[in-house]
Length: 61
Image (cartoon, rainbow, N blue to C red):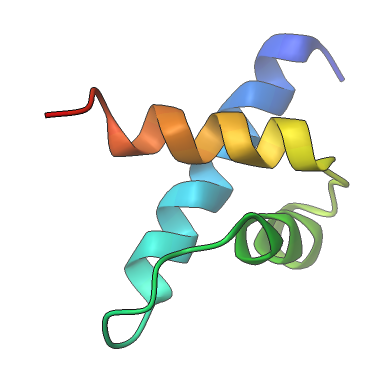
């Protein structure tokens, strides 16, 4: 799998994590990693999951 596909799927996992969250608890790196594994059968490391979370959140305000 190319690096670009990994980034796209990692971002999708981050978006799924945000869509599934309940309450006010923030989405964690572990949430993104778990969704990537269960939904896309893809292992992400902490760095990849964290980068996807940052990219999904957009620029800081």
